[in-house]
Every structure is written in structure tokens, then in C-alpha cells.
Length: 329
Ligand SMILES: NC(=O)c1ccc[n+]([C@@H]2O[C@H](COP(=O)([O-])OP(=O)(O)OC[C@H]3O[C@@H](n4cnc5c(N)ncnc54)[C@H](OP(=O)(O)O)[C@@H]3O)[C@@H](O)[C@H]2O)c1
Image (tube, rainbow, N blue to C red; front, side, top):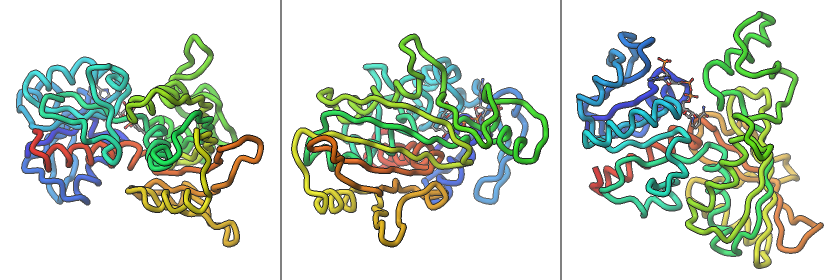
């Protein structure tokens, strides 16, 4: 399997390489691709040094799969060129997610939708992935009506520049700003750009992507996305109202049975999910389960995952694994 990693020098790209190696993805030739700035750089994969190449050379090499995490503009311009050359693209940016001709995949939920004809496949937003996976069995059992979600997102979600900003602030040195304000000792109710309706693009991704993933537009989502000074791992406070009533013990059971989800919920031992516990893990962690006492059929929960893993690299590579295992590339 000839595989290209586009954006190999970035935060997600680096984790992609780690996950490909860990999961022993069947790579026979690996093409590492980045911007012209990085062409010629060397990156080590499985003990072998590989030279970074540009996008045109990567298309010409006709890989079977190209994993993209190089921003929306690169993806809009280059994913179709790879697809035309016969490559199947799995894209991490927001470029194709809401395109009705493209599938939006969380493998545990809807990989079954994929066919050989899907040449550009979208990976959902990191905050969406952890939320929908944690809710998937509960939706099946009780049918979601409305979700109110507030996120507490780490700086690694913005990329290398933002991680550097936080490190500079901690070290007390001046440097380039990824955010309009300091992020250390702060919380910014501002993830991605503001839109005409007053929401940020990140909030609208959380509001719109879940319905597409579940193939069900009968529930609604409203979101507030906040950037906090954690280096990695996104947390979410989720309030979900169901059509049908639930039993809390059964909710715990269903969450423990959800593939890729781990229940961490015991207030007696101060057990609950936290970014430091989710770091470098592929699972989504769920805790603080409690009935919303202000409204019927409503549950409060706390969901944490490593945004660079299940939120990006792991989910993308799981999609690629599904394509390979089912002879779809
Ligand atoms: N961080 C997250 O938690 C997360 C989660 C899900 C999805 N994503 C998405 O993944 C993508 C990358 O995010 P990131 O956090 O890894 O960002 P990043 O650390 O800034 O890395 C960006 C990568 O894209 C490459 N790139 C930029 N412009 C390019 C161009 N014109 N042509 C080719 N390559 C180009 C960069 O190459 P150079 O090094 O040569 O500049 C670098 O490899 C974004 O679309 C982001 O929305 C991120």
C-alpha cells in the first residue's frame, strides 16, 4: 500500500505517523508531503529517513491512499487532483465535511456507508467526533432531541503556532501570537472564526456535523466553544435531552459497551475524565453522569479525548484501515 501523508510536518501529521507505526498499517511506501517550505526536510518513520516532497510530486506518484491534514485551502485545491489520479483521500480539514456528495465518517458509527466510489472522505471535527461517539449508543436507545454542549479545547487544536504561543507565555518570552489575546491564565470564547450569526465556525461544526454522521436530522445541537490553556486534549460539558426516559445504571452500561469509549465515573473516588489522563490515548472518556434535575429525560455528562488522536489521526487511520480491510481502495 502506497500511502501519502499530506501535512506530515504539522501537529496532526506527526501523530498520524506515530499512529500508522503503532497500528502497523500496511504501508509499503510512504510519501511525506508538506508545503514548499519543508520540501527536502527529513522525517524518520519506522527507523527510516524519508525526504519531504511537494504536492505535485505526490500526485504524480499515484498513492492508493492520501491522508490530508494540511488545512482547508490545500485540501480544496489538491484533494480533487489526487482523486482524479485514482487516490482515495481521507481529509481532516473542514473543506468537504458538509458537501452532500462526500461522506463524513466516524468508523464505529457509519463506516458501513463507504464504497469504492468514495474518493474524498471527510473526517469530522475533533470536538464532534468525541461527542457523537460517546452519545452513539444512547441515541440508539433513547433518541436524542437536543444537545447543549460547551467545550474546553486545548491549544494543540489550533496547531503548532498556538502551542508555541502558550510555551512562549509560560517562558515569559515575546513571540508570534496565534490568538488575538494571551491564552495562558485565560479562556477564550473564540475557537475558529466568527460567522454572521454570531457563532464561531467551530460551534457551527458541532451543531451541524452530528446529524450528517447519524444520518438523522431529527435532533438539534447548540454549542459554545472555548479555548483554554491546556496543551492537549479537548473536554466537553454535554447536556442531552432524549425523547425517551432513561435509567442511569443502563446509561452507564451502554457507555461501557460503546466501542472506543471508556467510562470513568465514580465520584466517591474522584474518578472522572481529564485531559492529562486522555493524553496519547485513542479512546474517548466519559464521566460525571447525572440526571438533569431541571428537565425530564435529560442527562449531563463530561467527555474528554485526545484531539490529535481520536479527534484527528486515529479516526482518519481507522477510516483508512476500513478501506483496506474491505477492499475499497
Ligand atoms: N490540531 C487538531 O486537533 C486538529 C484536529 C482535527 C483536524 N485538524 C485539521 O488538520 C489540519 C492540520 O492541523 P495541524 O494542527 O496539524 O496544523 P499545523 O500544525 O499548523 O500543520 C499544518 C501542516 O500543513 C502543511 N501545509 C500548510 N500549508 C500547506 C500547503 N500550502 N501545501 C502543503 N502543505 C501545507 C504544513 O506544512 P509546513 O510545515 O511545510 O508548513 C504542516 O505540515 C487542519 O486542517 C486542521 O483543521 C486539526
